[in-house]
Image 1 (cartoon, rainbow, N blue to C red):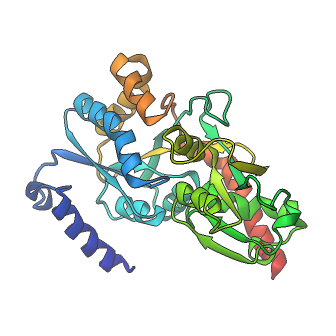
Image 2 (cartoon, rainbow, N blue to C red):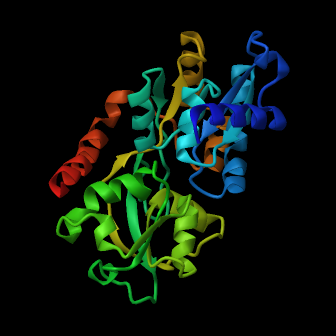
Length: 305
């Protein structure tokens, strides 16, 4: 999709969905904010999970906040870069992509995760996992040579970037595309995990947080998967702002609201629903360890050439 095509499509969709008021489109004083987010799971489930938090932020900020779940990681970045979204949640890797294109995209807080089926202690971090279906013949990494692999999205950290950068170390330096017989992008972590369960894929790289949430809501069953590889810990999804769309005062206020949720009963209730323990402060420097990991992917490409 070209830039102009995207802009035309987004504005048409935004007007249809009521994301922008006629006043906003006419350039009058902004009375609303748009929150764009990557879709890490089924869109309806994700919207329901975020609803109390969006409502809480809206009440505290005193402005209407429109929730916009994009259909791909790249679309979330484009919404921010093209000044249609004021703030949003990105994955760690796709944030680095956005940041490399414009420093107007700035992280303000991270997403601290509560303990779940795989994360035993609260942490503003997570891991990627390579899973296969329990009871299948795919019980070792070696057994996956020539198998069908489901990845999440080209912009995903745990569902694409980490596996491509780090997993070759487990298979003698062989790139994923040469080790597996077929690779496809499922579109979300839920879809990738379901593809394995439904035998449309033999294995998948997924986020443990997304997998745990799917289990909690009954979309997947705990104990249905073999876990053949776990990535190193990486920084969790950042909440970013578009400095072209929000003033320094608005950004500071948004940061204060998000960080203060953990100290407020209504905020705590919203955090519980969205399955976030807290919004800890986060800056661009917090992504330097991930930058080093992803540099390995570039080194692998150079060796291949």
